[in-house]
Length: 90
Image (cartoon, rainbow, N blue to C red; front, side):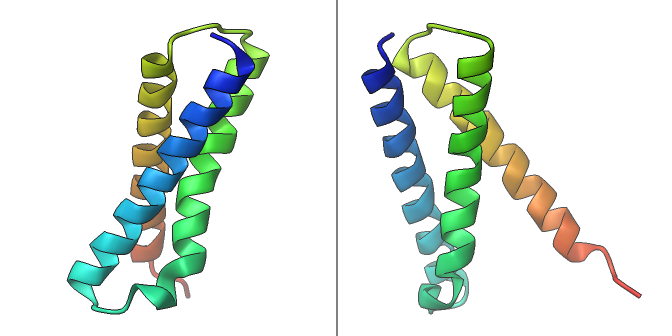
């Protein structure tokens, strides 16, 4: 896979995850504008992680593999963030 394809795939995944996050907050709270920073972080962090993994491992996989890696990292980031918010701070 060429670098341009990888970058476009990660960009499309990040945009899709960002819109998913905003729609999720729209359905729960009604005002996703308050969560724009969170939406940007939660969609960009997995893209950067996937880019690092793909570059360091020198993997040349299909766009489907890249999207699957992004999806796994997105779910992991969402789960860690959710449980991090639940932990009480004294």
